Length: 335
Image 1 (cartoon, rainbow, N blue to C red):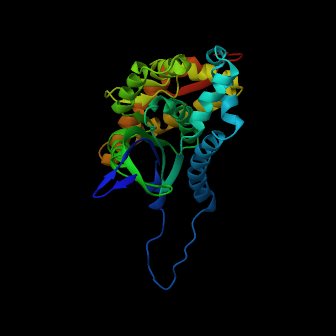
Image 2: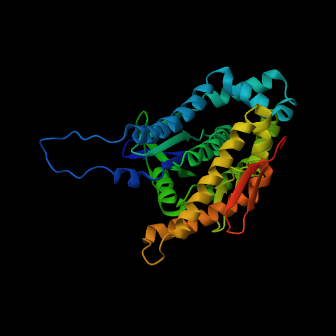
């Protein structure tokens, strides 16, 4: 943000906001205040550690990616993940592109059970942020499965808007308000909503006339990100969402050597979803709270999303006569 006499210039930022779900249930287990003389109470350490470790882990994994921008780790990751794409470049062209990405200032901010990452879109070179956007989506496609498997799901939103830093690491502005509104009002269950302005941003990047040096680089990034088979798909309610069970993600994790770990997470996710749905079904319909009724609907939709994509991860589901599922991994499966 820069100041000019009686005006203030604000900048465009890409903002990712992640919320750890289920905190109200956890906080509801705290004892009521009975005395202001005794302020210390005890809570189960295992449960407390489980919650806080997820919060710190989400923050840490974003920080590791951001730190990688200033080392060779991200460069090596990009070369590995986009091997066919990068093989078309001379080494000096690759390094030049990555150097410009490293100049982007990415910050992580945490408040309560929410974590936000933001990056300023550089004047004249908005497409440089595509690598950051791809990185964030890759991270979230892994983490949303891990947290759901651990029964501490996350939801969130990615958007673009105006904002500024009040001080380093303290972001404020319409972009934050939009991300929070989408996450809190529309995400509702474990999913990451991709705001329409992100789609418009990707389309704009594809249409930009840039120097030949980066032309293919820019086009390939936008094409991969906008491929509905990969990172972004339409959900049942018309929102664009992060397609974290995409078969292409299964293929990429296999190339990088951790497909089995991811497949185990997908398996545990589906077990948790199925168990939750059976719990909802057994509950008394007349005594269900409005919140429980909503959760039943949302988890039914989540189950449909998983069922559609489980074959891409080599997971089979069969049901007995009572409708109870048996969930197994297909042996020797390669995505």
